[in-house]
Length: 299
Image (cartoon, rainbow, N blue to C red; front, side):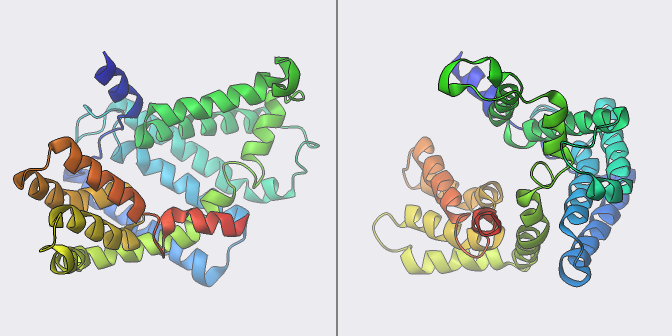
């Protein structure tokens, strides 16, 4: 029972390997998106609201196609429901992008939301929750839902745990139509610093930079006591400096270090634990630092 519950809470959707007729359209879309981010973040100096709205909206459209609803989803073909969600994301993208000037001119909490603004904002929040579930699992999604419910009904809680009344309209207004919610600092950091570091880190990885880091770690600590574990820690730390992602770090270095540690007598659980801990720590190393440093600097 426990493994089933943990799998349900922490399992994520499968990453699809797109092939066939969709291969080149997806490649072209992501290439154009990357070029736009580079232009907007470095040359054009787009204002914060426009940058975050366009960045987040355009990411949502292919997300439902590239990430399945569950780990057992078809790894090569999107379901009709995935296409439906992608179409809804495209509708949200068109709506919010074309309404950027109106959003920028609104006075939050004073200007009443129209019905179309209310519906599209609610739809965007629901799509965000589904993308969160697919990418990081149900556990974090439930935490987010819990805080949403606390915002809406926390005024009914007596004592110090309660708070003042926050209506649904005010909640949506603050979280969607200002830069203090979905289009706030974390997305702005992702669209500038984090995106650029991860992109150039990917270039370095494709140029065999990850293999160089692994060979360097093996040369430094491979002959010492506990060498395989030290290689895992060192290579994960070095790879984390260019990826900033624990997941990609585990995939890149763990595919080599975990079998190597098991072959030399490490228990499978211990080998996996060493690699996961090392990759998580590696993602916090400069310059990417898991985006946390950039978010704190923007606050």
